[in-house]
Image (cartoon, rainbow, N blue to C red; front, side, top):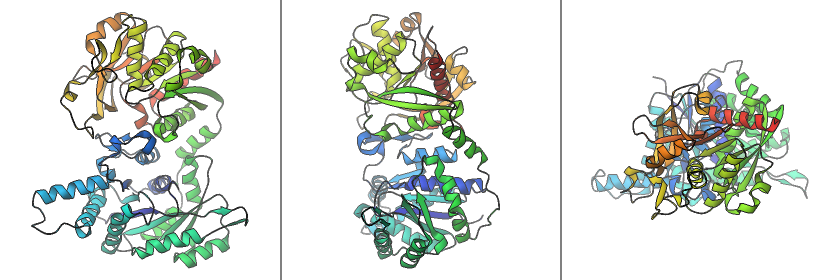
Length: 537
């Protein structure tokens, strides 16, 4: 079996430079060249996973098929590569320390003093190599969270140093992403921050093999030579990463800069003459040249931070391209949606999506948005909590159950149309204990969802504790809120639709987690199509 190659992506100078996008773009190029590639993210924070983190603090929590609550960068990896990720693709410091402490408690270290080096670094190295040793991948790209010099990143950097020594230069390499700031007063790009960043990396014993330079302006040849000389890399390994119109341009920009060729040369792997990005570029063309535009309202609780709904926004881009439509998403805070302003705020929209969320805040605004979409025949999609709000709204305003609510918002509720799941009733720990991962769902024929999927059995990813209360199912169905998707094993209601409405769908799962560039999610494609049909009316 050939040796798996490892690429480590580190960052310096500033956070939010786009390590995840660079890693995903490089992976895409290596993939279309015929290599089996995966990407993993090492996060330096002490939380065991992002599942307990506030969306304002960390953006959305992404969920994999096997039920891992992970960093949102894994969403980028899946959207670019069209390959599912898993528990092994995201590791946090919390998980590393938890594992080492559990081993110590079991006596696995034979009475030795447990230390950061070698015990923590050994654990990190093991986690990095799990995917490589599976035999499923030729190349594993590992993104190290944070920036070089951060105290919390030091054990990861040391583990990378050791691994590079163990694997050798033909089997491992480091790509360092830095910022080349432009000083308008001086009218020039400055390389000093990058030099300092590379120096900090070298002080930890690691030499960067490739420099990827985020910049607002083109890098000239003199600047590239200067960076190569002072940062100890080859000239062709100084890669320009200029600001792009869309993240989906980045693979083509990296192809122009020959980042993939530099990597393959380092690994002494054959370089094919042609790179087939035709399917990717077809998507980019459709995305950039829409024939129509629709405006869709995203009603949420965390709309101040775009990353809170990252996968939903990207799903709209994929579905928009599939329909040759520009989807203009209007973020509307559910907490600021009082009843008297609903028509004013929502009246111009072509469709309405009520987003996932937790807790009591902003619930009334979501319910009002659902009501407006239902009564005015506006295409509607409710996801997770959004679906539950649709059930509550229908119970209150159609069935006249005025006290209808979820036990999440009112644990003493007299009419809990949304109930705590049976298996959740004795759960006390909050982390990693929700109903997570991929579950099957059986669709009713002649429903909107069946038409969208074209299949009777589907599998979708979940993240919730509360569920539709089946005690109210008969009443709701007789009143016109139809159950069109159920879990075949448990009878859990997964999907509801309003009878005699052009397009009104609520889903308990998260379709946004499975939408990719090459396979836009069918539910989003159908929803955007419904918005387009509505706009033409």
